[in-house]
Amino acid sequence: MIRVLVVDDDARVAHNHREVVEGLPGFTVVDVVHSASAALGAVEEHRPDLVLLDLYLPDESGMTVLRTLRTPASTGHPVDVLVITAVRDIEQVRAALHGGAVHYLLKPFPLSALRDQLERYAAAHQRLTRIGEATQGDVDRLFGLLRPAPTQTLPKGLTSATSELIAATLRAADSDLSAAEVAERTGVARVTARRYLEYLCADGRAELRMRYGSTGRPEHRYRWAR
Image (cartoon, rainbow, N blue to C red; front, side, top):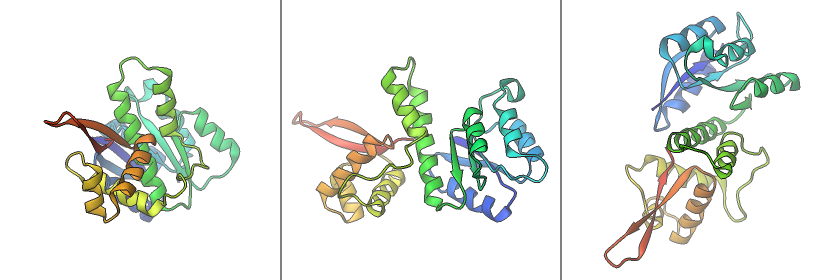
């Protein structure tokens, strides 16, 4: 379970972010706070894995919080930070990236953008727990998941609405699914379901498993990477 702390001076925005986090499997919100001092206290108390951090805070800049959290001696355990802010100053963006933020989301944004970034973080988090010694391919995939190119688009012929539908179906499943099962649950054609499943696997958000039956012919099974 990925433990998340939400930090935002706007209570309504913080509530929305909390709902997004709690709507994703494998995530839980440990606390919601609205100031820098409360954020540092909550980190010490709850030891979250990830902090959703606004930079506009009433007592200190969120950058101060980021720098403190990225100092190992300050927390005693690793804490990742996803910056969520309306600050567009390029120096602040550079400072956040140099300070170790896993990503920088600019307000306003659709909540689906936050959901997507959390899913990518979960996929990267899961990969890190499985890797003993990293290869260059492992490193490339991890950094690609955490910091996807902003111009990334779906392959030709795929739509974001159907991609989100397929992704939601995998997230909600209790076990892995075949393309035929995904097609049945979503109402799309089997070949269409497979195209989206292959895209999600290539993007690192889903995983392919082979199941061998009595005939020896493997069945392709897909599961959400969490």
